Image (tube, rainbow, N blue to C red; front, side, top):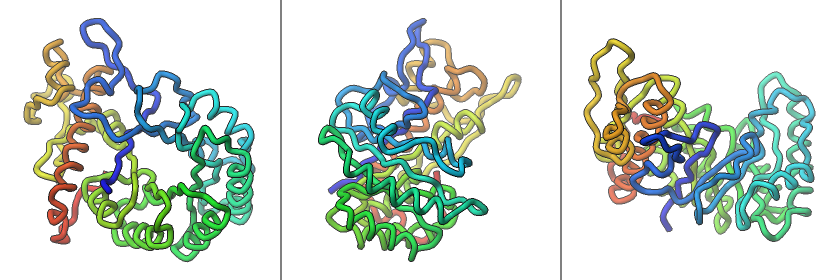
Length: 303
């Protein structure tokens, strides 16, 4: 089975082309397997006929000692925004150093149990596996499997993307433990990680760094096989140094006088984000066809 990549839909998703406001997914060479969005954004304008994963937005309330969100309130919002058949994630609380970790663990266990009991058949309930080390994650996964979850997500490792050995060890062990169940990796989707998840038999992953890096850093990716190379978008008064691209995003916007290799306007930045996503998914496809490309142990870019 092929790994599925879920693109992330946030709050910046439109590009003006010839005076018309279009969603960024219309600028993609190919569509991802599905999309992931959060209740934080409360989106209703979504791509048609594509699988969806909806999360509860735990990052938005990470500093609350006791989250205001409950399984019942979360489901009410899912009913308003998530299409029938969506995978929906039970409310969870991030395990942050210095916080009341035991209270957060208790919240996660209780929330997952209640959410599964009340989730309607129109949705596929998913719970998030948390833990400060591998042993704790294994115990959390065993608990969720014992409750009867068929869809599980691994959270809290995106921030450790540079620690490849640690991330790979966590995912490999949890894949072994959850064999026969859907396993999703939250937030790690670089070509290297994508190839490893494919090798491990993970079902899906998501990532949004193509957006973050396009906006905050002006990053413009080019692809060489399954590897991505960073270029810097030109600011005002600077020459364009990134190679010209003919992907759908770059070509359409260039015809409209917008240069994705420049930094500044919503159109240049959003166009560059769409371009980056085109390059990322092309690298995924190459890595799927040529899994040996990452067997050399070289350090690779973690998006």
